[in-house]
Length: 148
Ligand SMILES: CC(C)(COP(=O)(O)OP(=O)(O)OC[C@H]1O[C@@H](n2cnc3c(N)ncnc32)[C@H](O)[C@@H]1OP(=O)(O)O)[C@@H](O)C(=O)NCCC(=O)NCCS
Image 1 (cartoon, rainbow, N blue to C red):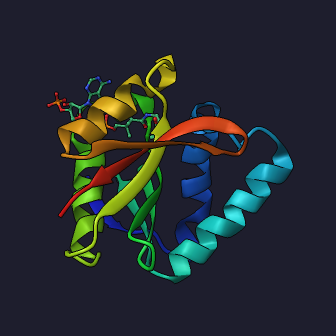
Image 2 (image 1 turned 180 degrees about the horizontal axis):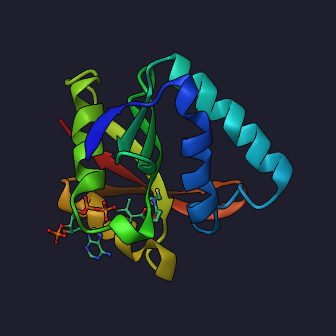
């Protein structure tokens, strides 16, 4: 399993993974939304802000982050490859590219949502602490913050 930057030639493999996990993400319900997301991923790839986990033939983990805002913007691992510390390895790769003095922010599901159990446990395990309750794509979410 390689953890590396996703590049434009990876876009089809990347979107295959997004298609498998899209039900976990508000805002990826329609074809139009997925087309827009594809353009967003390409923009992150060009900015060296897209990290993926790759086997010989597929992408099984994907992470997008903002260098300017020190923000984790998207994170998903293929269901068949979870609990193998793939997300953790991608986050460590991301942290090595970020300003080490600035806190890191991610927004994720609120506590009462069953889909959020894995993500919330994951972020807490990595040292993120709960922050403000906000909204994203009209859905209630919560910020998690990694203090430095
Ligand atoms: C959240 C997600 C990215 C975690 O990916 P992963 O590769 O399985 O996570 P890791 O293997 O790196 O987990 C590291 C640690 O986090 C914790 N953790 C991860 N998933 C967990 C779960 N389902 N329940 C409890 N703890 C969990 C554990 O402490 C784990 O270490 P351990 O397996 O040795 O106990 C993955 O479950 C996923 O893609 N979920 C759907 C999409 C999503 O929720 N994305 C985040 C939205 S912001």
